[in-house]
Image (cartoon, rainbow, N blue to C red; front, side):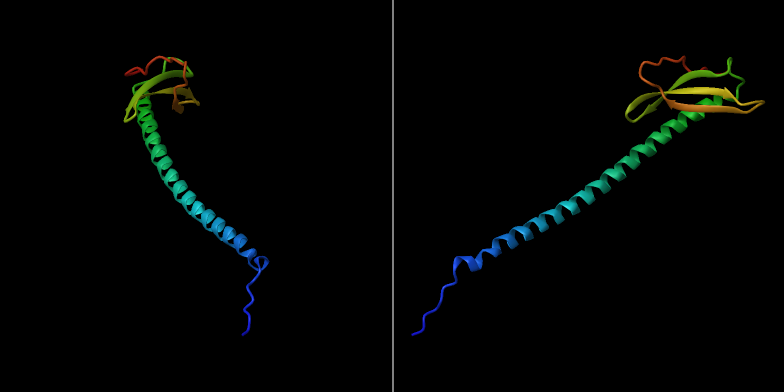
Length: 125
């Protein structure tokens, strides 16, 4: 009878490291796929928020230009505020009128900074 030789423990030692490396590779790949999907969702949501913010600012600009059509502001520069109703509640925008010569005006609309309290936009100048 021939004796079968049982492999020694040292011949099987490298398999554990290979299993660990394969496991880490699979886990990091799954993490990368999940991160990519999450970043895509966040990018789409931030796009929706930015579009809504631009729409609110455009409404405030429309109000500012409507009032400018009624006449000239009482001072140069003239700063006032308007409140726009949004889905998140009312937001105050600061409007500044600055004459750039003749009939040309520079109109800026920005969210009102905390602590600022400019007068409200009149219905006409």
